[in-house]
Image (cartoon, rainbow over all chains, first blue to last red; front, top):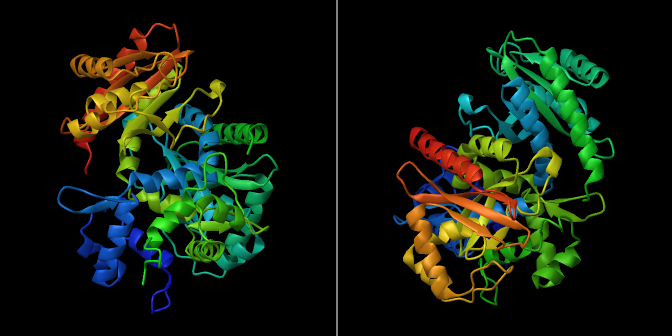
Length: 251
Length: 251
C-alpha cells in the first residue's frame, strides 16, 4: 500500500522531503530534514535510506544528506525544459556578450516565473541563487511577459490578487496591471523599471516555439537608468532565432 | 507501509518509472511507462497520478505524461552539481569562444563520466543528447582524467573490466590503461585521439575545488588531426580560474 495512514502519498512525502533542500541549504542531517519537512523522524529516516539506495540522495562521510546527481540526471535528460534551455543557450550567450548584463530565461510554472537559466558576465561573478528560482508574475519583467501571454484562467487568477509589491515600481493595482498586460501583448515587450529591485530595470520579450506559442520569456536586467533600446533589439533578435531553431529541430 | 509486498521500496519504483524517460523519449502514455519500467499497470497508474499531483510529472491534453518542471526545479536548486556548473560556465564559455569546438564538463558518478554541461558554437547547432548523458571512464578523455584521479577502489573496479572498446583508439588493455592513468596524473592532462569516435580527439584536464580535490573534468572535442596545444592551454587556464572561483565563493 503506497499511501500512509494519514492519506498522504509516498510521492507527496518525497516531495516534502526534497523541498527542504535549497540553494542556500544543500547539506542537511536527517533530523534537520525531518524537522523542516514535518515528517515523523522514523518516516524521514526510512525515506532517506530508500532515496539514498536509489541514488536520488547522497550521504557524505559524516552521514549528512545532499541531493544526488542521479536526481539531477533523471530530471534533466527527459525534460522539455532542458530542450528549450539548450536551444536558447547559444542565443542567450550572444545577448549576454553584447549587452554585458544578466541574461535570463524563464517559464510559467504554477503561477510564477521559474528561471531556467541565467548568464552573467565573468566579471559580474556567478549568481546561482536565481537559477531554479522563482519570481511573482506581476513583478518581474519575465513574469509580466508570461502573464500577458498566459491562458485567461491563469491571468485572472493572478489579477484576483494579492498583488504584493516587491519594490516601488511593482504594479500592485489590478486595473493598471490589466492595461499593462494588454500593452505588452500589443507591443511584444516590456520595460519594467524598479519592479523587482529599485536599482534595476528588467526588459523582457516572449519566446515562441515553432508553432508560435509563447513558451518562455527572455530578459535582461539593466541598471535602473541605462538605455534599453539596444538590449531590446538584441532580445528580439535572439527570440526570433530561438523560434527558428525550434522549428528546425526535432522533438 | 512504504514497501511493496515484493520488498521493493516506493522510492525505487519511482526511480524505475522516471528512468523510462530519456532525451529521445520525453512523452509517454502510462501504458508505455508500465511496459518499459516493468511495473504492474495498476502500480504505474497510481504512481503517475501521485507524481502528477505533486508536480513531478505533468500530463498533456491527451493524457500523455512527461517530466514536470517541478522535478527539475527540486533537483536543480539544492544541487552541488549546479553550483559547480555555475562556477564553471563563464570559463567554459571563454574556452568555447576561443577554441570554437564542443566544450564539456563531466563528473564521476557511479563508475561513469556524467556530463553536466556541453557548449557548442551557434553554428555547430545544439546537441542536447549529451547533457545528462554518460560515457565510460576508460574511453572518454573526461573519464580518463576522472579515473586517473579517482579513489583507488573506483580505479581498480574499472581496471578489473570489462574494458569495452568504443572506437579503435579506446584503451582496452588493463596494463596499458594503468600506465596511461599514471601519465595523466603526472602531466595533468590527457589527449585521447579516436577513443570515443574515430573522427575526433578529446582533450581533458582536471578541475579542482578550493581545497585542491579533483571534482570534475573539463574537455574539448576536436577534429581528429587538429592541433591540440592551443586547446590545452585554454583548458588549463579555465581550470585554474574555476579553482580560484571555488575558493572565493561561499560553500
